[in-house]
Length: 166
Ligand SMILES: [Zn+2]
Image (cartoon, rainbow, N blue to C red):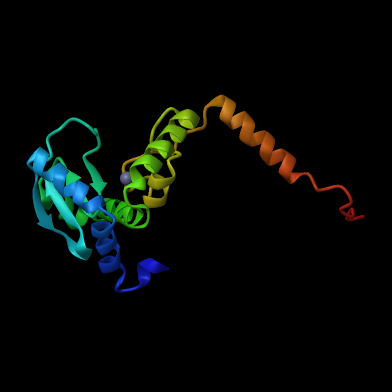
């Protein structure tokens, strides 16, 4: 709903500047010597990122999308889905500010616990779009699958006192 408002991109990136998450991004830019290019909606692309961590080709901090590729690669219409995915992370930073780092780490840990991968059950990656971000929907580990099956089957039993259809 908020995303449909024309002012939302401006509000979103302004919030990331106020809450400090975009300042953290500018520091990372300075340390890693990446260069900034403007993208639509107040988003900036930091291109030429060279560190090995994280291993994804793109990641977002505040309103800045870092990429190991040239900016043109990310801004190519063929990568619109990926840019939209990263832009959703900008919105997450707008809402959570620096708390995002902790919340994201917790969500990654939770996903790893359930599936053995950091993205699949990570709330933030699911909200941004798993496939668009290059993540796969993975099956739950056996213990987690057993647990959710049991929870689902106990929820599907009608509560005591429900009138029978006959
Ligand atoms: Zn993502």
